[in-house]
Image 1 (cartoon, rainbow, N blue to C red):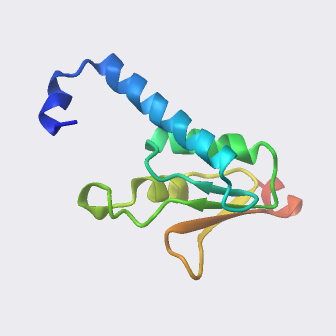
Image 2: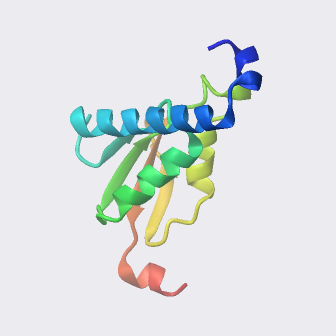
Length: 118
């Protein structure tokens, strides 16, 4: 889509397209998992990615690896999804950048005593 079209495309269409893209990425993750407890969030919206991560954490995995990328396809090369996940307080989980792959975040379940103090 030509960027000039964004100004003329109705907002409802943008919301519908974003929803379809997010749902497609979620389906792809379910149908083609790279490994257990691993999400590839490439091409999702920030909102869609945060909702997907939150839903997956409801299953209380010990560890969840989240591939966000490093921002090569983002405006100003800023990894918006990665930054949003790092800024969010995920109750019961710590978040860190993977030691070997800076495009992956590792979310680890805290020991119960650590997070009940909040």
